[in-house]
Length: 101
Image 1 (cartoon, helix red, strand yellow):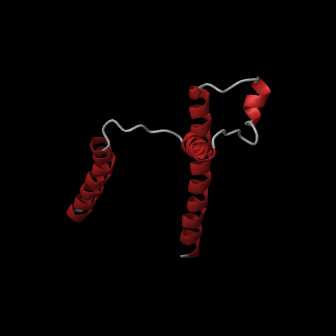
Image 2: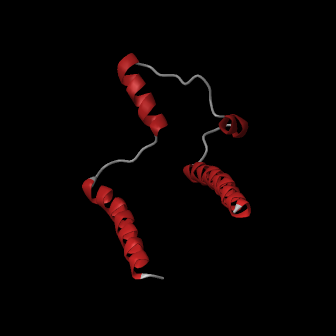
Image 3: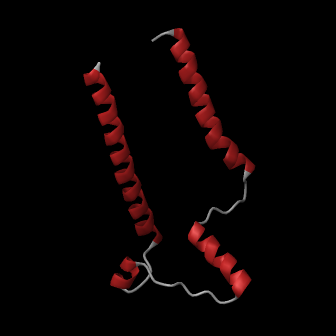
């Protein structure tokens, strides 16, 4: 690996580290909530009572609200599937370019 490549990698790692640390230091005491909760709170402030149009399918099936851990797990699984699809498509593009050359 060339010296120039090492400097670029070090700079990228430094930028990534700063992108992680700076928000944590700048937002001390901030609450990180979901957009669903924030939206329903704003509607309640403006209009008064808020009643959702429908309930999530899984909550209907199990007869109650899903635990937070299960919601997080489902979100992570969806993210993993999405990343897998994107990586597969990008890999196909790279291989196609190699075979054309």
